Amino acid sequence: MKKHQAKNLLTKYVKGETTAHERTLLEQWFLKDLEDSKHVPSQSRIEEADERITAYLMSHIGLQQTETKITKIWPRIAVAAAALILIFGSLFFLRSNFAKQQIVKNTINDIAPGSNKAVLTLANGKSIVLDNSQNGLIAKQGVTVINKSIKGELVYKQAESNEVPASKLTYNLITIPRGAMSQVVVLPDGSKVWINAASSLRYPTVFAANERKVELTGEAYFEVAHNPAKPFKVVSNNQTVEVLGTHFNINSYNDEPGINTTLLQGSVRIMANGNEKVLKPGQQSTIKNGTINLSEVDVSEVVAWKDGYFEFSNTDIQSAVRQISRWYDVEMQCEGHINDETLTGRISRSRNISEVLQMFQQSKNINITITGRRIMVKE
Image: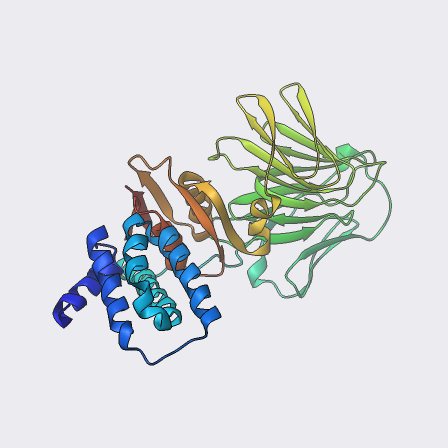
């Protein structure tokens, strides 16, 4: 193969534009080039390389013919087997890096991840932007003191143990806008809540004598302090979740097709439209059209956002788009017949959006067009 031909093929290869025949020619050229290699690996290394390169080609390139062609010439280049893996790895790196460059190229100003924009609204209507607040005392609400910890958590501590009638409760509201970091709130009873972007939580500054009740919009993860005498209730849309002490996640965004409640520890009761179900650890309830359905799920994927990650495992594109859109506060639209496409991958939510969008390049049927803060995902 002439140098100019190889150069043209390499350019097409990293762009993902080569045909099956062209890819085979390119691969055979590398194999031929390695015949004169002076590198002589051990026999075990050769056998290991043989197995790895065959598996790699079959799983990543998907060429049935490639395996046959390589097998025929393998005896002549066995000594170069180990080096071959490095070459193919480089090719795939180039191709992946090209995809990243194309996304960055289309993004005039790359979009940074969410920042701390949480807003606390006190009982008297006063709003406090937590990012602008120093650590320490934030406010006093009756017998409750509100502090901001060095970790950025909002901590409520009841100075007196006096119980307050439900009719005299005062409420605070924590709001996390789109494009904002999640916020941790420690409630007066010691329960801990992680609140996701585009979400809000309304709660009393002191819980009533007979129950602990909060109202959620969006998504939050709860670690509820155990108290058999005071059930903990979360009201979100048309659903009420009741627990005594447990760990669970609720996703109740208005743009999602249903309300999902996922249990990690303990037990929770789901109530909606006169129906109720009890969840076991590892189960998720979905309320859609007034019906409660239960299923087994991967809880690590559900709560990855709490730990600072996007995690997708054969996740439908529409669902992934909604998550990314909220976190980066961008407008993302899907066009064409991509409902059958899925996304798999895990990446830190601290990365710029261009790096997150690289995961979409796994599907050859998806193209991304970026204009400012508007992103089009289409066939």
